[in-house]
Each structure stands twice: as structure tokens, then as C-alpha cells.
Length: 628
Picture (spheres, rainbow, N blue to C red):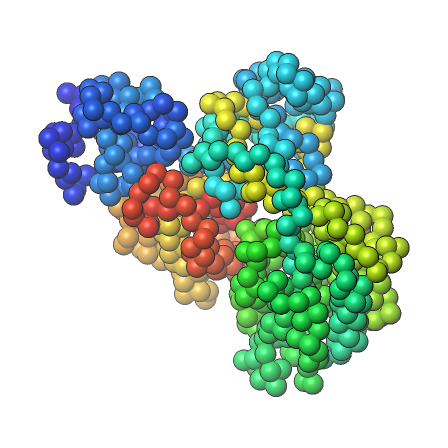
């Protein structure tokens, strides 16, 4: 009797429409899932006859078990049966957690070790960085020891070259000094391994870069608009006769503020010029000649740069650009997601996630004007812009201009633009020509630009050469560089289906609605939440006994290695925190909801992992930091 009842209806062929996968032990909504090992074969029956091979490292649902030897797999949770596979050719995947490489520019390549003992010995060594360097050097010399694989030298961008790096276990290790480190037990391989291409010496000469300025064009910004135009004109004039002119283009997006309260502003955002390689380099100059500041003032000191950044992400075609650079120029802080004048209703963390998903490096030139000082805006705006411009090992790409005077701004925008151009010229082997190299950035600015440019190069070469994830079966690695634990090597992500993300968005919407409805009577918040969730739940009894907000959300969020501002809030916590803190929680939830809507709106982000024909089973690796 080891065969589930579902087997009795389908051994002869037909698939019962009522079939559902097996639930995980102790779960009410989470189905059992596995990843196939290389060499797995599918059979119509649990006997191995008429077997056909399937790619390794694909994810499936389990519909039935035949004793301990066979599992019946499905491509989705709706009865799309694939066949039977020996259980020994699968790996249980309890949480759909995966690792995603960060760009290795500016840090050391990650090590994949044979076992947890060696990995713990590495991170608890007196000098973990030196020990990691020894292991890395030995592996590169053909003496791998405990190292079973190295992170690829080039960047494997999961958003453009999807791969599976499933995390089977995540343990946080506290250390005597420094931040904690996560030990990750992983298996690894690309979902559809592609034959690696040999390095093409001409590939880098084809590298193309787009630099888009996102500039505040509210009242009083005219001098900075003119200085930006002049910096662009100088570079265009300097390289128009150089070969590098074929590798670099400019664009410009202007932003003001919401027109709802101030229609005289003319626009919230407007694209004046795009980095269009079908047009000559100088075509940008007439395109941006008419940019001017507003003749009417907007409401308050804060502006809406988030709307400008989002316009640059959505309305610029970045597909032909290997180097993707955006430079935000503003003298004011950003409107928060809950501000009634916000155009996007996105917060700093949400727009940062969208910038990262697009593969863009966002620089911020912040004008520290006397007006901003009088408005007590500088410190808060600096904190926002440092956060939104985070970029791997480069840190924040935030450049304040003390005093904010136009004459102080000009050399900053010129140095930054020329430095990015110089990096492209060096990468492609094409000299810049008629520009003064002394005008390029120096010091810390030059170091940051170099790391960003290296990151763009590694990503480009990785795509050109079809670099894949290291091909190992099981190993242990760390989520950070042992030499510098603040440098993340692997991001932990949760692979969610469209259906799951849709359910999560609906759950967040219910939280926002219940919070708004209970604003005057916060004692009813949890009661309204339980009612809303119970109406749609498969297991209303679970909802009735939930004592935290996390207990009302999907079980796939249980036990993940992240700290949530929302999940652990109990009814007592909610009542104790007061109206202002409650509103802050709801605002954060609403910002996450809008981020998920943005993910949903971009079909290029989604991948079918198991070959399902159901669009609801397509998956996106959601960063842990983007969870509620």
C-alpha cells in the first residue's frame, strides 16, 4: 500500500484533473518538491521501462511515491504529470531558496567546499581572508584540496542567464569579531547548460554603454541643466572623431513633480534623449536643447527623483547596452512612498531593487545648496541617496557637492562622465582622443567608477561566453567574502511562482485594507485580517490560530533566514506600537505591494524552471530583502 491513491487513477495513462501534489509533512499548503540529479530518466510507470532522459537540476512537484524507490513527478501543481523517476535521482528541496551571485568586481571569487567542517574552519580561522586566498591559489594551481569548485571569473547574471543554485540549508554562524556569516549548503548547475563559447578577442570592442542623466528640472535648476548640457557637449566634441564614439551614447530624463496639485509644472517626467546607437553621437545635443527648469514651484522642498529613475528604467531601451549608467542630479530629498504627491508610490528600497534587476549602476550627484540646508533636508536626503545607489563592492555611488554652486557642480558632472567614458575606451581598446584625461575623476571616485566598470565588463563577457554556474553536485559556501564579510558574494533569494507572488500581493493588500479600516479602532485590526484571510484560505483553522501577521501569510515564508519588520508582529505588538508606528508598518507593506506589481509587469523577469505550460508556474528569484 505504499502507492498513493493518485497512482491508481493514472498508471494506465489518463491524468485525473483532481490530482494534486503531496503536501510536505506538517504543512497545509506547501507541496513536496525535488530537484532532479544529472542522469535522471522519466518512465511512464515505476519500473524504469521506456525511460527517457531529462536535464539535471530541474524542479518538480511530487505527486506520488512508490515505496522508497520511486517518485511520480509533475511540472506544476495542477496535474501536468511528467512521469516516474528513481527517488535516488532526486534531491529534496524544502524551501525554494536559491543563491544568486553578486557581481564579483571588487571582491574575491567565492569558494565551494566539500563539506561543512572545512567551511566552518575557514570562517573561524584566525585570518579567514588569508586562508581563503591559500585555498583559492591551490585550486587554481590544480591542487583543489577541500575546494570542489570556484565561482566563475565572469559574472553570471541570474536575471539574464537564469541558473539554479538551490540552497538546501542555511546556517548563520556568529563569530568573535565581525558580522555573522551564513554557511550555505548548495547544489549547482545552470537550468539549461549552454556550451561555453571561447573568448572572442573582438567581443570587448563591441561593448556599448549608455549614460542617462536623470535631472531635477524644478524651479531654480536652470544653471545645473546648462552645466550638464555643456559637459555632454564637451565630451561629444572631444570624441566625435575618435573610434570610441561608436561605443558610447547619452540620454536625458527630466523630472519635476506630480501634476495633480500643480498642473503648471507641465510634466512629472519627460524623456528628452535616449542612448540610441542608430543615431550619431551628436544627435543628443539638439534633443536636449529645449530642457529648462519649471516656471512654477512645486509643493514642499522634496521632489520626486524616484519617478525620474523609474522613467529611465522603463522608457529607455537598455537591451543593446552592456554598460548601463544613470546619473541622478538633484538638490532635494526624495518623496517617500506614502507621500500623497508621490507619482510611483515606491520607496527607496523598492526602486533600488528595480535598478538592480535592470542591471543599472545609479550614481547620485547631490547639490548641498543653502536652500536645502535651511530646509534641514541634507542629512535625510544623503541617507536616501546612499541607500538607493548601493552597488556591490563599490559601496554607495553618492557624490555630494558642498555648497551646491553651479561652478562647483560642473567639474563633478564632467569628471564622472569622462571617467565612465574613459573606462569604456580602455575596455574596448579605443583611445578617447581630444579630451583632457586630467579632468577625469581621481581618488575614491575613480576607484568606485573602476569597480562599476569592471562589473559591467564581467557581466558582458559572462553573457558573451555563456558563463554558467559552477557544475558541482553538492557543496558548502559562504554568502560573503571571507576577506571582507561586508562584501556579499551570494544573495539569498526565494524562487516564487507568479501564483505565489500574486497570492502574497493579495495578502499585503488585505493587510493595508484592514489597517486602513481599523485606523480609528486598532483593536479590530487582527479580527479583520483573520476574516479576510479565512475567506480565501484552504485551511481556515490555521488562520484562526495564527497569532502573528506571518502566521496569516503563505507557509513558504516560514523559517527563512531573514529578519522581517512585519512577519513577527502579534496582536499585542500591534496595539502597543501606537498609531504612528502602525502607519509606518502599513506604508512599508504598501511599498512592497507596489514592488511586486512591478515584478509582475515585466514578463522578461520570469522563467519556467520545470517546463510547465502554466504561466502561473513561471518563477522569479525574489531577493530576501524584498520580502515583507
